[in-house]
Length: 403
Ligand SMILES: Nc1ncnc2c1ncn2[C@@H]1O[C@H](COP(=O)(O)OP(=O)(O)OP(=O)(O)O)[C@@H](O)[C@H]1O
Ligand SMILES: [Mg+2]
Image 1 (cartoon, protein in one colour):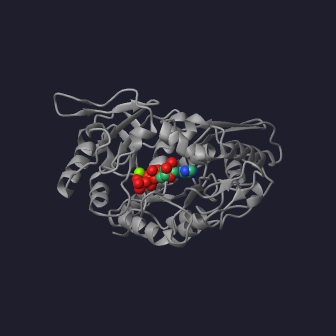
Image 2 (tube, helix red, strand yellow):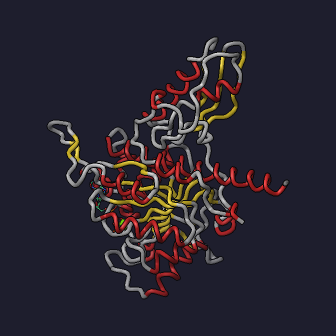
Image 3 (cartoon, rainbow, N blue to C red):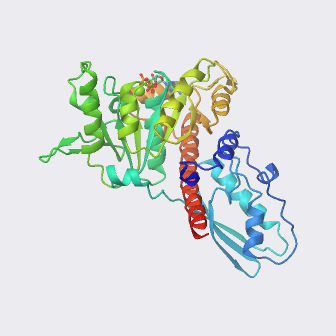
């Protein structure tokens, strides 16, 4: 049955358009491929509003806001128009830009007076697999990389804080059993607790729930564990932690694509994966390996996040691309997955990691913090696209069935 493909034919669009650079959205960016320009004539109807909004491309995704399913609840009263626009991050400058572009696009239609764009933010309802293994968790996102030291844990922590700041409930599962680093990166407020029924209550930091092997190891001692023991710990973390209601659970993967990563990808009810890379050309093979691991286990790759992309000089304020400009974006494009954004090198990122205050919290106005927020927003858009595609698939299934 052809309809049962995990992702639809639209994936190709999502993948290639996903590599559009942030800020590419303007109403001048033109309509999505195959969508005719709207005729600015006729009476003002819901359809004409939709056609106007088809001219507005999402800054991170390239696809238009109607195609992405971000617009709902269109109301027309006299010449006034209002609608809801679903957004991932209220604080992002791209969000304000998107809102203005939507209002301007509709405002061009003859006879339109006031346009009111209501920003809404919603989390996905969660898929079947997540509901069974982690019934109270809506989305489980893996943060992985083909090789070590690329900034995965730092990304996991900062994305978690960025999502928390949108009002979502968030948890982090530090799955790096041999080298757990997440608790160091976040000042822990409450340690985890082992409950009489063998369940585990997670630690908390900045309102984020957290579990990590670091809590169960004597300080400064390496974990001396053999393969089966490691997967045992991972399984327990997946099955025994009482997360409570969570919108997002971020899983910080150990580096590489070995057995433990495969076990994780099979056992954890992953909604999607973010692949972290540095911009160098040599990273391509590593990213490919990581993407292929998730594809093998049927986990959609939400996109590539590039870290240590460039350095902003505090003398001249210019961006210096120390490694290679556009490396992560090119890698994403060549593999056919979206590019979620690039995070600059900033000593405050490391400082925040060492001191337990992630940069998104410690220096929210820094370029690195806003880059992490952009990446979080782009990942959420990909989750929405996945959900929309599931909806599309169901529709086509019903149509086929009815014939
Ligand atoms: N944008 C950045 N600017 C400056 N330093 C960074 C940035 N991102 C990460 N780092 C630093 O790079 C080092 C490695 O980061 P991190 O521990 O997050 O990588 P990792 O991929 O999780 O590593 P491992 O594979 O060992 O788990 C850390 O010292 C971190 O502070
Ligand atoms: Mg790490």
